[in-house]
Length: 440
Ligand SMILES: [Zn+2]
Ligand SMILES: [Zn+2]
Image (tube, rainbow, N blue to C red; front, top):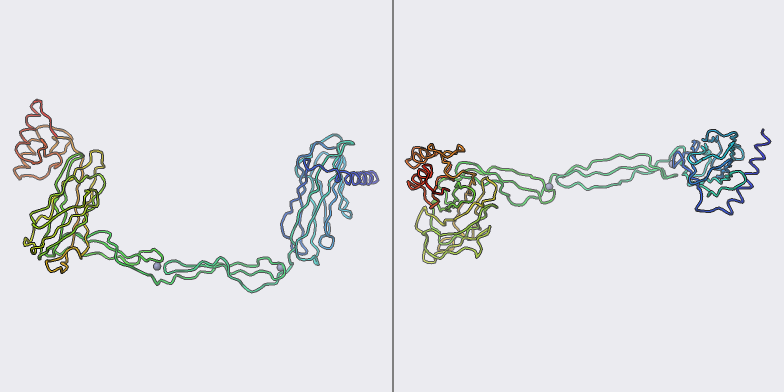
């Protein structure tokens, strides 16, 4: 038997030389996969040989080659089953196999165990395998396979620690780096430790950002943001507005979807101003139809378009406005019919240099925002119970008599003439009594 194997091996190897010469790159190929891409001196690596693209075979041989100063063979093992002959000659690094009939042998076919010598040179080394596959007397084209593995030290020699992946700390966020130690002989990473660089906490802050303006009854809120790290570094409440402070104030109103409402901007506790320029911003869903300035004399004008934000500007070159409390302007808004029912803000802003007296001295004012609560309503449903009936007449009567203010204000102007009065009661009364009349 041993003799047969030797003859077979010799035959296969001779054939392999021929087949290498005539190797067709479009044919089968061998892939070598090491169990690890790097092997320490004195350690074992297993190289798995896999075959792809080969036609059926009846016999085969593998001739391994590697640097013998680097490796010595430990063992070799065919992974194929059903063979009538399997052999591996460790001293020659040659393997042979034979089947009783043509067999598909694609897949993992062989595992070679190599041990890196203690004296193996550090660095990259190549392992190759030359195949000789036959189907009877026919050679099967198959390319030579190879792989490289890196030989590493058995015992590393630590170099000086180096810093990698450096991320700077700033005022708000910690930084970090990896402290890494490499082997000075084989270059392997021996250790890696992530170190934290604490945040400095030295923030750079600008001016206050107003989150919520105060009113006469509710405190406001403001904060400062660090321009470097973006963190909020200071938050403070703003005290309620002093009721005696000069102020400019937007009313808050309620209106039904699709309906119009007047919103006053008033001046309170006026110590004497001769000019005021306001920037009025209002939420989507509102349309500003008209601006009517109050009885404040002088010259007044708006920006050419009434889209948000709109400028309301006024001056009186003849002297200070005498009235302590007065309407600065009345803004007529329509709540868009298709908008969301919610509170829509109307906010005012101004540059202190634009609020001055006749001597161009700045006059300190505070501003209070307002808005419009846009409501869903049913025309005629004064008591907001979802139905229109005599209860609504009673409620509207009581509302107009000052007995209650619990009404859906959006529904009170039944005849939509801009006023809520006894005419609305009459209109609703007739509507409920079968008159051919439209209510709003
Ligand atoms: Zn090393
Ligand atoms: Zn910061």
